[in-house]
Length: 286
Image (cartoon, rainbow, N blue to C red):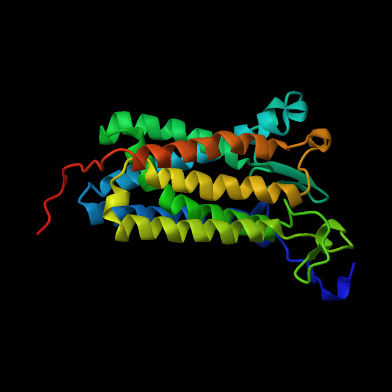
């Protein structure tokens, strides 16, 4: 390995700390991503004449569903062997270090679990708030979600976690905080770039292609393929997150991506073979 050509990465995951409270880049990226998401979805609702207050209500539904779903996804899909013996740690955002216990946020979130949690929350939101089909809400939520996904992967970079296998490429990262000595694929950067491309496409389709925007499920299908097909491919050069994955032809992340990829293909096909559906504006435009 040509380590002289590699990028030596030793950034602290902490921005600063106040006693037992540790403010980390990952948590900051998560929070900023959600605030940007709320701003974008509010702009979208105003653009089409829907009630912008829905954006604030949807924010509450989604943030709770994302945290709970992503946490439970990690617990059940990746760490049940451990958490089944330590049930109190499932929702205990405390870590023990050399200086004692610190509040650091949850040490393990799974994007697939977050996706399942969000789908459940959207169903409740659609039934209780918009009175419109789940896919109508999902088509709007996926636009800012792609941006949030990119920011979360940036948080993974700052944590020096979830990276790839060894590489000779000149942009390989040596993660010094993890005592790595050879360059590894910065897969979190690969994913973040793909997620940003997906976000740009969704914004274009929503604001510039009315015929596609109003085809129920089209934007959701593009999102599922853009995010989860990317995830499926990049997993081939990513280190396994758990030991049990070492003997698997496809790892857990890839198996969990397959249903979303298939759903994306179906949604795009269904959207393009059915006429657009336009809902009446709730707000009067002047």
